Amino acid sequence: MLYTGSQKCLGAPPGISPISFSDRAYKRFLSRKTKPVSYYMDLSELANYWGCDDAPARRYHHTGMISSTYAMREALALIAEEGLENCWARHKACSDQLRKGVTDMGLKIYTNKPENVLPTITGVMIPEGVDWKAVSGYLMSNYRVEISGGLGHTAGKIWRVGLMGYNARPDVVDMFLRVFKEALQKQGYNASKM
Image (cartoon, rainbow, N blue to C red; front, side, top):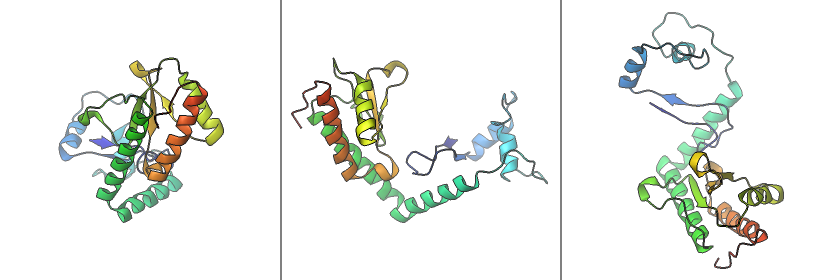
């Protein structure tokens, strides 16, 4: 089974989540013993609504998100036009560019284990004495650039910098590194190595 969100690497507006099941996963799902706790997440109902089961009639589940579906189709068309392998390579190259730029500022990356590196999101360690919220706020209020803080055990320890879809471009990485350095310097961090 796999799923994704439309707004991440696919570059469509948020609100639609493609999901796919292998034959094995679908059979396992059909033989579950526990009933779904939510009508909205009842995959049997969703499968029927979308015509993915063998039922003779479709049941109403929700009003379809027509504009989101068309937006998803267009986002997928752009990926198909670029070529999936080219899309992956572009994301990887931009991730490498971002990681190099951040380490050139003297910052540390959350993980350097190749098997844990995602080309779509980079965890940047927050240096001692830097207010991570002030940096994020500066970027948003001055440049409309949004980065997030860590989640769970990384909260307050890292920034999460995403380069996905349309934003996975070298010029966007260059711009981000420039304004990120500026935001860090406003917090008293010496990013002069860059």
